[in-house]
Amino acid sequence: MTERLAHTPDGAPTRGPRGTIFEQRSVRAQSDVVAQLDVPELPVDDMLGGRARENAPELPNVTEVQIARHYAHLASMNFGVDTGSYPLGSCTMKYNPRVNEDAARLPGFAGLHPYQPESSVQGALRLMFELQEALGEIAGLPEVTLQPAAGAHGELTAIMCFRAFHEHTGDARSRVIIPDSAHGTNPATVSMAGYTVTQVPSNGRGGVDVAALRDALDTDVAAVMLTNPNTLGLFDENICAITDAAHQVGALAYCDGANLNAIMGIARPGDMGFDAMHINLHKTFSTPHGGGGPGSGPVCVTPELAPYLPGPVVARTDDGYGFVVPERSIGRVRSFFGNFGVLVRAYAYIMGLGAQGLHEASEQAVVSANYLKARLCAAYDVPYDRTCMHEFVLSGMRQRREHGVRTLDIAKRLLDYGTHPPTVYFPLIVDEALMIEPTETESLAELDRFVDAMLAIAQEAQAEPEMLKHAPYTTPVRRLDEARAARDPQLRWRPTE
Image (cartoon, rainbow, N blue to C red; front, side):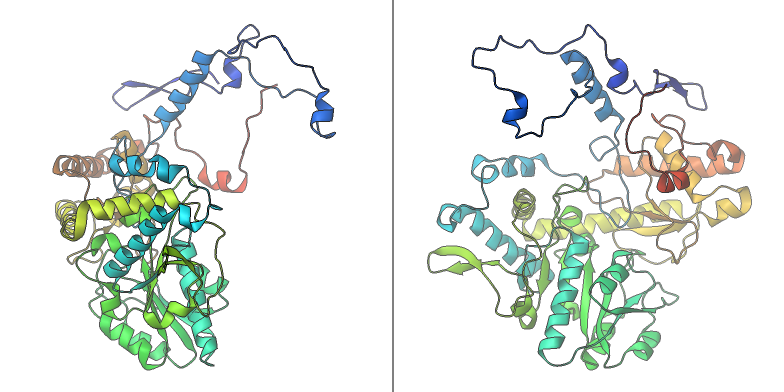
């Protein structure tokens, strides 16, 4: 692969890939100078217990500066929140303050080992305990475990606690109710926990159809599982009626905490009648997002469910702080707190903002989303046109119906304007959905830049629909065959013949 030039529609060039590190190799290049061996040489095969490879690895011959430039170039090809706006609805890709990174890298935190005696890590245990206390207060659900490694892991942990609770009380059940706007992880969690899914529809206001919910409820329902605000970015106006209805038949109410970014410091799920929720620290409390981890999805529950939490949890002891195992614990859901650095970042974020700061962050996220919706509603359809929370859903049906331009085309074209596309085609109950979340960390100027890009694309859909169908034009890699990539992935580089 040689370096190529891609072009925008107006002819401005942008540099494409430089090629793989193997394609930059040279027979004469090298990046190290090895000193002469001054100790007795042992046969490699003896040193490796007979496991030495027969042939040397085919590593490329390159200089140190080639290596540095290669990886710097790869980094420059990535799109992230440090390089541009990332309005990814339902995933809260907001800026992570660097002071949190500094805190996580303090030697007393970064150098810990999971097998250290509790007496030697009292500072870390105190931080974990105080983080549990803070998350419990924010959620209105005072008992907390920090064990789960991600949001979906937290969901599974909570539903397993529900199952243990019902079984301990001699009231085992078989069904869990979820709304049709649920995150995809919700039905997966229900199935993994051994329950069957019962889906209920949304009403015309974008909330749960309460009448349909009541019809689905009976004494075989273990839980009602929903997100509030929901995946349409709307606060369910009937939330207390929903949790009350669940409790009337002995079911528990679970809150998917993915959208806590809209209500932290303002409203508490525990006060709405929820019995448990998970919290995505990467979405709400400014810790790293994605990349395979480490992640964190703490679970907050009522005192009645505390005995079933996975152990150990951090508690006060006679000697300061230590690990304890709840009385009827479901057991461990992971081995060690290898994501401790993530917990430090979340703690630093909460302590840095304080109660008032968290409140203001939520308010700003809601104001920013409503501002964008108000400015874009004339150019795009708004399926549920009511005050939203931290995110909202547009539809590209007008563009598809009138000009043959799909939501995917709109999303790909946004890349040419330097903005990462929002979530597309979700939630499934909205045709040609564009799910947009600006977060509280984007400035008014950046919000206006996003609006200008979306309005310009709406104009392009009308004037040059074919041009949109081949976007993006300025990215290192153009539009790929995504269907084939999913079915026939090429996971390694192979040299050409």
